[in-house]
Length: 280
Ligand code: DGL
Image (cartoon, rainbow, N blue to C red; front, top):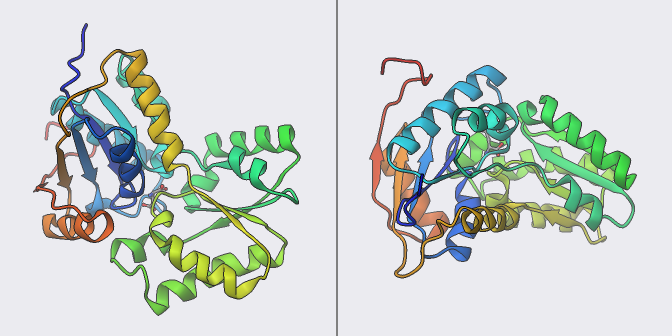
């Protein structure tokens, strides 16, 4: 089956976090048409069961494929851990890129082998993540200090990137990692690069040492570009269009596009069933 290069790429997250990945995709692949789905009515994914996250992911992927997507980007670490295998089973011919906490680049960047990992509790408990940690630990000798960040994605969904409450929460999660000697922090949730400026301020207040922050958004965009080339369906020519979808407020997602990416993007509110098998 030949896939039209003009078909869009479907990108999704539990909410606005995936915009931290979308900005790299737009920068690297400006000709591609993009569909972005924010599942904000079900955010955060980080405190849901693995099965609930997998079901939402399958339903959203089904929606995006029905809208003609030629490739999928799971712009969410939590959904990747919970659902990437299932997604590849359901859509075996489709290029699918997931996001994993950057343990490998984190280990490579660290000078003392102590790497803090900030992620959702669901990601850190996932079998796929534990396996990755074991592999990278064994290969690099790095020690990973794991920190689940309950409530942080909610703050970011609320648009509280700079509030005192968000800063206090970040301090509570980050300072203990620095106290244990971490010289590298992996941003293992796509929401967290959106508060990178606040994280940098807190790190600078807490330690005079240089601390490297690892975000995998750009690597995800590069992997997507490779898969599109391999499938011979990369789009060339005029600039691509971007369409937003959300399971919650359309206005909220429009505001997020404007504030986080400086873009005016049309957004449609949609209701989708939890499972592909749902009649809805
Ligand atoms: N942005 C997501 C991630 O990368 C999920 C955050 C959440 O919904 O808890 O893990």
